[in-house]
Length: 321
Image (tube, rainbow, N blue to C red):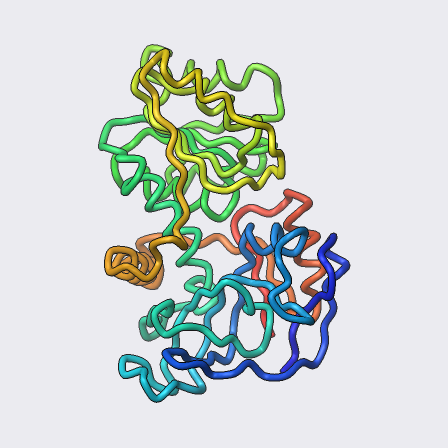
């Protein structure tokens, strides 16, 4: 098969398009003929500095397509089923070998490109807001990096739950398309004074009830500064690649909390299995929207990664074999 591979960590240009052996079908697994690859934030982080689990290494968490092989011990999937799937690596290829437990069926007639972008960003957003963030109707939520995959999902899910939604990005232009998806207030976090602006948008300036922060580093400290009394902050990743330590001492002053979220830690649980399938069905039915900014051929994976890191994209960037 053809795949986007690399032999060492580094910038996007370490990615090469090569012929490599087909992946092996493992017990409990399936092999998918890939139709669309959703490039996740973790894919770029792993390319930059993550472990190389094979040589050459094929990066990538998530893709959708048609099952072409099924292990003998798998009874709930069949050749010909269209699914979206996740794995620790291997999506940037024509074939994707995964556990059957991390596949979700695609409803008939659904847009495979849109559904390819659902499990990780929408599932993560849902967990951040509800399972761990305990968002309730009438509250105000701040979503950092609102133009990213988790951000676009979180804006819609929070608005559907009856929240007031504030989101940030590196420019207001990146947030403009999100107003029709439920964004109430857009804030440019590249400008000084943005924390005070967020607080001014909350009820009587008291601060927001919940923050979902996928940027990390020093930005996380500022996210907590946006919270009101008993506010909850969720940290989910470090897209900003800033490893500044967090001063937890500030949380006690207003009885605030900070919770880390990692969807992968619970992805095979019945709760998450059902939740992700519901989100896939919602996107397929048009109840939730996936924004695909650009699509690149798999052969141009390096250019796709470079585009993501330019911070110009609004929503997802997709590869097609």
